[in-house]
Length: 152
Image (cartoon, rainbow, N blue to C red; front, side, top):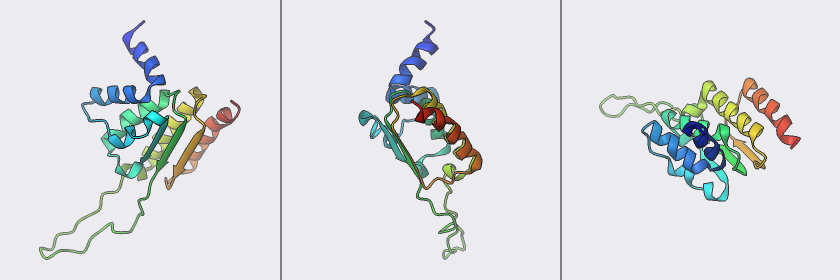
């Protein structure tokens, strides 16, 4: 069997090891927040704290995963509050970083990854998306996949 196929098949059953593997491939450090609840079969994290570069291994592992029983992703970012700070004594202005999950491209990528997971997994029993700015195309993507998921 080709090594990449073997890795993908194994990764489908072990989120943690596949996520670690993809992080190593892109020369990044796996996030503890992502790995925290994996032993219980749950991927649960605050999406506001994930940098753009850290999303790729998360999404690519989620797409193929067949072992998670729960996926819970939340965002607490409140747009407009504190986006700009008053100038300090030096006249500098600071902008608060807007998390990548607030972009329409990132939410669409996330929904596509969740939809792929729903398509391949019979283990996933709970999906919670809290505070994410989902748009119509995101919801359509999830709805199409959830029809098959609900029929399992």
